[in-house]
Image 1 (cartoon, rainbow, N blue to C red):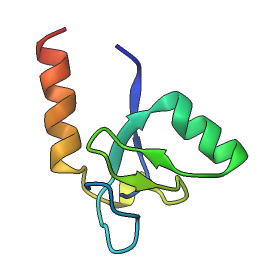
Image 2 (cartoon, one colour; image 1 turned 180 degrees about the vertical axis):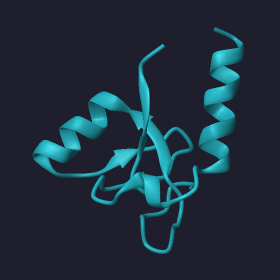
Image 3 (cartoon, helix red, strand yellow; image 1 turned 90 degrees about the vertical axis):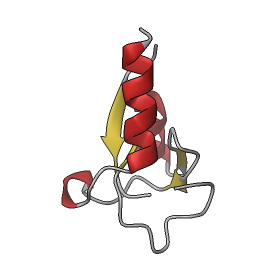
Image 4 (tube, one colour; image 1 turned 45 degrees about the horizontal axis):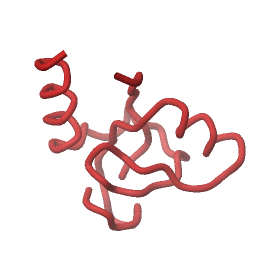
Length: 74
């Protein structure tokens, strides 16, 4: 399984307007988007630009659920 990390705010496939959660996404995507610009797709499907401090927001419940399921099944 790929490494995940909390990324700046972003649920579903909507854009980051109005979302007040931090989301899990693949580390490689976050790094790429941080350097080159662009959007990242969170585990829950939400698309966002990694520009906000993720520690300022609660974790997306769906992303958290997906990570817990992945950890449970190895």
